[in-house]
Amino acid sequence: MNKIWMEQSACTDFSSDVFFPSDGMGVINAKSICENCSVSKSCLEYALHNHIDHGVWGGCSERQRRRILKARRIDR
Ligand code: SF4
Image (cartoon, rainbow, N blue to C red):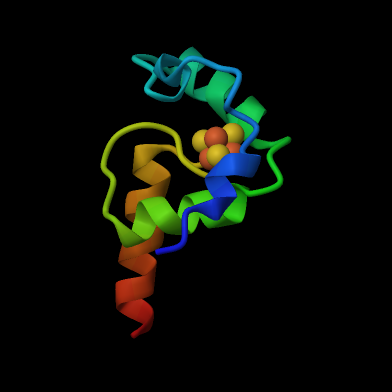
């Protein structure tokens, strides 16, 4: 999968720890950064495609990504 989108991510100036939060407030904080990211859609699809279990990707928590994957399996 093409990863050129990573060069345009809004999170380059943040520690990667921000996107692997340990509590709900951390998830909210990470999501707020993703809200202003122009490549969030690509980021989310990358995480879904690669079954990345941990962290906030594309503005979605681990739980949200599991729901999306489950919904997509049901739709098939
Ligand atoms: S959507 Fe969030 S985690 Fe993904 S590249 Fe953008 S800021 Fe980073």
